[in-house]
Amino acid sequence: MEKRNIPISLPVTGEEEWQATKESIMTGWLTSGPKVREFEQLFAERHQVKHAIAVTSATTALHLSVVALGVGPGDEVIVPAFTWVSTANVVLYQGAKVVFVDIDPKTFNLDPSKLKEKITSKTKAIIPVHLFGLCANMDDIKEVAGNIPLIEDGACAAGSAFKGVPAGGLGTLGCFSFHPRKSVTTGEGGMLTTNDDALAEKIGMLRNHGASVSEEQRHHGPKPYILPDFNLLGYNYRMTDLQGSVGIVQVKKLDQFIDERDKWAAFYKEQLKDIEWLSLPEYGTDYKHGWQSFVTLVDETKAPYSRNEIMEKLQEKGISTRPGTHAVHMLTYYKEKYGIRPNDFPAAKKANDHSMAIPLHNRMVEEDYQYIVDALKNI
Image (cartoon, rainbow, N blue to C red; front, side):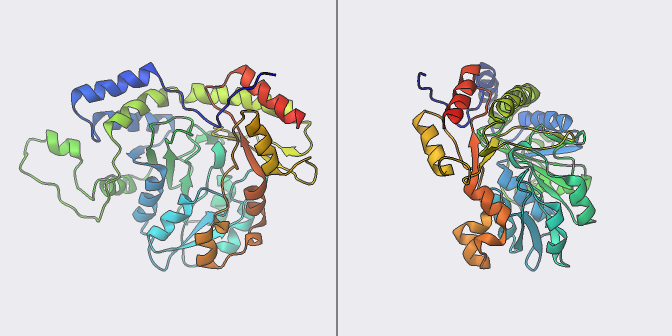
């Protein structure tokens, strides 16, 4: 079998994105403006929410969410132990305490049965993560959370849904990423969604230094001598119109991209189901998976090699793999800050040590998928 070179992920960008960017460059309007506004409207319509607010990354979307909810010193925010580090970092930015909760080992998402014991009178918010494109079980989380605000970390979940409701409209606020490893990309960039008018207005100001009017409104307004007022301590988290132009093109392709990924995820599940040492993604019919990644779990008690050795063997064949993500409680900073032991969150530790994402993206062809299946079967 001829060796192939298959990256873990590649964005699909081309002539349409180039022309869209060129249009913005030629107009001379490069900062946040009409293209960002159009991108926000399209994203809001696709995710069935009232408001979508474009920012520089999912991390800044998460940060603005905790700021808007008034999270500060003395508060606690509950975060799954298995997620990308920024989910927890934004809590510390506000001087609050991160409270970790373990995950469901089948879905890699927050385990609602472990949530109640983590809630205290200091709990200001909960951040369920829709990891790898699979929504968390928001019904069970809401039942336990009561009136506590829920911030959806949907960094991986553009186009995903739970019980017919798209990610981003399942909680108080939703946060998305457009990093190149995501289903749709603007290079870097993020989006914040909500159905709460007051929160949307506040976040719109916070992302723009706390200004009472946007850059576009100020430049096109009839009274050029009027400077914006600043009622809030804000940030410069604005998305550029260059990114917005790409986002417009990309979000129109989102459903096509997910449909293709769903087809090949089904191929993987059928072809790999008999490998006894490899656990495949599990979820019920209530979920529409966005397939940002196809993440498996290696059972080293049955596998001929360790997870790391299997990843090395696949790398030798030109197949790029990654751990799903990391257990944040095992990272040096958090381990030392909170005195946490790895086994305090056993499901997250297992996912940290044994998860393996294999390539699934829209630049792959049938021969790529078959090559990966054959390589895994040969192992």
